Image 1: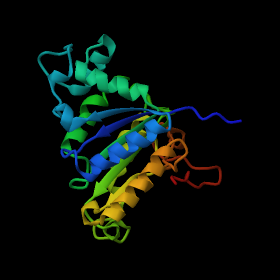
Image 2: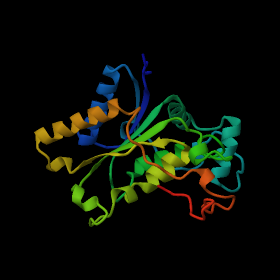
Image 3: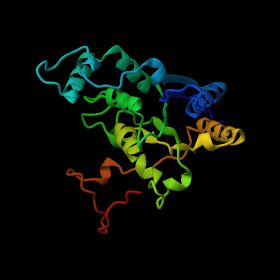
Image 4: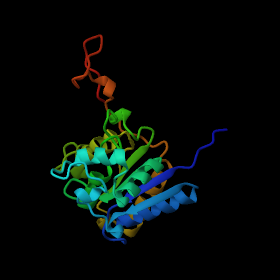
Amino acid sequence: MTVIRAMRVFIVHAHPEAKSFSGAMTRTATEALRAAGNEVVISDLYAMGFNPVSDRRNFTTVRDPAYFRQQAEEAHAASHDGFATELQQEMDKLFWCDVLILQFPLWWFGLPAILKGWVDRVFASGGRTYGGGKWYDRGVFVGKRAMCALTIGGPESMYSERGLNGALSTILFPINHGMLYFTGFTVIEPFVVHAPVRKTDEERAAELGRYRERVLGLATAATISYPKLADYDERYVLRATPEGKTVSKS
């Protein structure tokens, strides 16, 4: 008999309105996961008043008082337990969780500023969340999963390969690949709800039902395949196979 271990899920919620559809998604995920015996921790960034601006307030230590280089200060803080309390608490949640969910509306083809600032401040270098050779499939968070759950104002047709806005996979690449996979997470295919404000109550309920099924299947949900470090040589040039073909990036 296979025993499925309960998951520890960390949701980073970034929407200023609690009654928004993003808020409904976070509540749905939390209720479904907890009812199934999983643990859930939420960082509601707007409710927390999270400051997205990176500067010396990130640290209780100082490496160079004359010139601020964030990565150097992060490395120093990582070695001297020098991160500000609010950042250390968020880092602790990352290390605690099995699955990270970023819940947000797509704004200007990217993360809301408060969530981007959370990544800027919490995903610290110096080996804390990356660095020292710890990146991509050798990253700090290897073995953990992550997923973007987002709402988009436009219809699905606008976000195809031939759509007016371009493919959603391309739009989300800096997040899925450049933030999540870069730090070692296995990236789950995003969960997307298009134009929730234009949907009927019944359609919104159906979307929440669909999301409930997704979060209950986080452990086995389909993931995005990205290149491995071993696919590249020491100059980060894609290696060739014995037949002279380059390694596939699919």
